[in-house]
Image: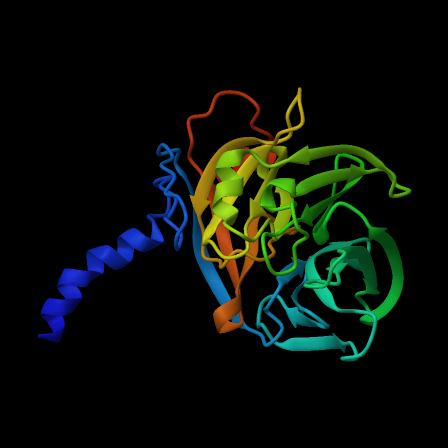
Length: 302
């Protein structure tokens, strides 16, 4: 009887997850189903590591990965998954809700907000990765939403600012107000972009949780819960990001980070299981033009 039930329900389970590499994005709870053409892109899982800090997002450098939760960060050996060092903030301290991180020149930059407090207040907090001591902070104050990710690309800082419907949101400013803002070296805004409606619909009442520029010089972004990655281009005209693809991924939304030592390896988290997942991005698409060296490497699953 158990075998019969498993046989009957297995197709339903597979359909709910979507099929990696088919470009068919999974339908969300109460959300729209979006059919994407088969583009040949996929994320192939290669490793998982448990971490009690795998709640908000990851970061990575040449030898370590980092798991980030609201008020704490764990530093782990990339090969063994062993905990190397940690930083833990006070429950009553100024650090309230950390999100995705970026490691650059020996420093870990993490987006931070007062979520679910309103008005939404944001900052970028900085740690020295050699000591895991907090060393710097840049405050946006009340800005364009809750900062959820930070990255460095094309000579600029980029930050995602989430807006929500309901908890953590401000009346009249739902997910469609979510923005990606480009800053100069002095953190002065120089450009801003919104997400296309097809992606905003996937956010449901939540928003954009993770973002990182990766293969092909494109922005790879996630929502709050969905097991998928949105591949986007910065538009040459206008202010709306261009949707290239939606690719199923071993994630539950939240933050993401590319491995600087392995350009095609993406770190994600499974919040419910408190796991950091490493996947290989494979791009076997037939897209013409615009492919960089990194994208070409990912065509072979490198």
